[in-house]
Length: 327
Image 1 (cartoon, rainbow, N blue to C red):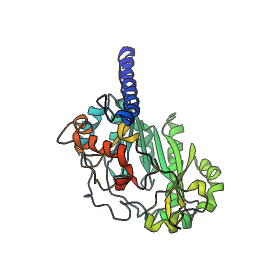
Image 2: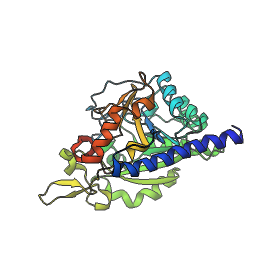
Image 3: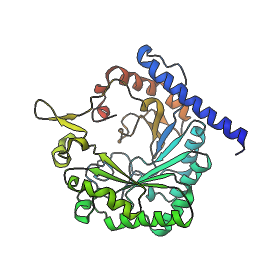
Image 4: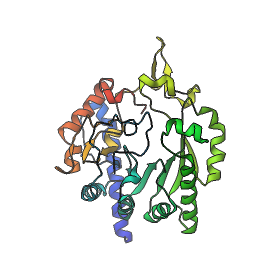
């Protein structure tokens, strides 16, 4: 990529971002969309099945109503080719374990070749030393690995069917191959979702996982179904998205407003090509269109997508998938 092309390439991306920001802030006041929207990030779903049985995950607890599939290579490349001129960031993850896709590393390499920052999230059960080497070689920029417990007993209370030892080894393998291949990437982020059963380990998480070879640690609050909230919500309020209301029930700590940056900046492309509004639409209840039938930009700027944005802008609480969203 020569200097002139690279400058033009990134200038176009920055222009798309500027238009998004301007459109987002003016839409609230005018209900008019001034520019054709080009998202700067997208989540692509390689697979929508998983090898673990995490109780709050639709893919894990088998509540996902969408057909279990593996994204075709042609659908993936079509998506990336259409979006590459505006994208800064691709998340190769939505529901399911991305390493179950037989061409996962090729997907990463394709994004890398297009100059797009590429990120994924994994339970790490399939990351052997060979897989770790391929991951580093693919050009993946960042990987989030779910830890969620510092002992097997605590870990498996949520990551049901998983092995903490495999998680530790995966981090070690990735760190080893980064050093061996003299690569700064992927950044290895160990993620600890704080819940009632593991919050007592929080103080020891950072020193422990950094010793395994992780580059950084991220503590995350859990999205919990209100019907099961008592089982998982931690007692430490700083690690919870929820607070008790005046009636003794639970509500989101952060009250949502009638706007959502995600509806401008990012989208989700499901495993079958359905374009969805965001990662909270896990069962594909708000399909804007299918990328196998229309171009992404025709869908993202189409009637269904625009109607959804108007609903978000006028009464977001009326949309079911928005009621448990902390954004």
